[in-house]
Image 1: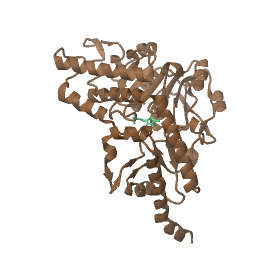
Image 2: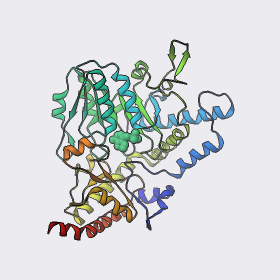
Image 3: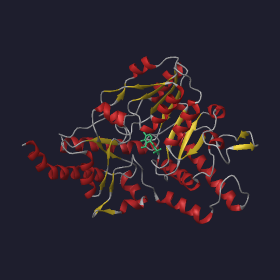
Image 4: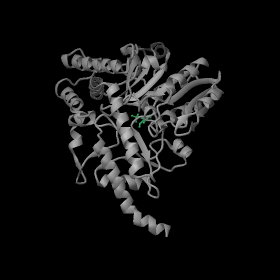
Length: 415
Ligand code: PLP
């Protein structure tokens, strides 16, 4: 039995029937499903230990704090961070990137430059657009070339002493491209720029050693790696966090408050103002442990095998279908974007849903990338630890049904 068949038993939702068919969930890049261990940890917390964290000295308050901080340790261990102080809990990648863009943004001067890439998710683009607009800085983008790679020669030409931040996705949420982030970080550091990596689509799928990557900031989401929604983390080098101003202000991020001035708390709490999403973070820690037990090397192998299977099946059963992204599974994660010629991506997704196959259709929060590819939309099938070859077979049959349904219509249109 392979990983998908074994692990899917841990995911109660996968036994659902949708529109009269067993659910085939191929939308994990938008949000992954949750194993029972995570669901139970969240409900156990509410049933037995809920109280606010870092405030109360009663038993529940201490238990809640203990579990919340244990979750931080689990996430730290999962991504290979050196210390728990380097892990700030956020609501997800978006919040982590905004935190950095706001903090670093305040230090930008007119003429400074930020480099992103053409394949960024909107959450690693708009915060930088806003920071540049507010400070008179300039936003530049590394072009996407070939099957969906970043043009590193063009990147070299963009880099200069004016470059303050390089912010790129570790893995593209549309093309699946695994970007050469270590090389990017090295080159950015040579001109003194800070490096932020958007790890939303990498952490759930690749073995990771954050220290070895060479980045300064790394943002990721819990809900894409089997954890609850409302969970995520920003990793950053300790000395950067110590020097950075807080993002949100309020309770718990302070050591001392006077009417006209305050002193900030230690990191990571300096960046966690207000009551955090305690239950989700606890679930996030359990998800990290679950993946660690599975072994991320095995997860990566499993998804690579699925990706190769999916590409071969699509090319042999539906050769007219345009596929996007690197064809080499070694350079790509388990994300398969495609289009059915003559059928709008939304119609494809709707017909697939009628047979219980859940995929995403649209621009996937990457409008500039779709503009670059000259596509209004794509359909995206994406995998996770519980995905099986049978899921991919269901997708292939579903596409046959799309073609059958729209075939007559397309012929009539052509005639
Ligand atoms: N970055 C990438 C590459 C993503 O795929 C996503 C979500 O799809 C995000 C950022 C935003 O993540 P979140 O919505 O969890 O903040």
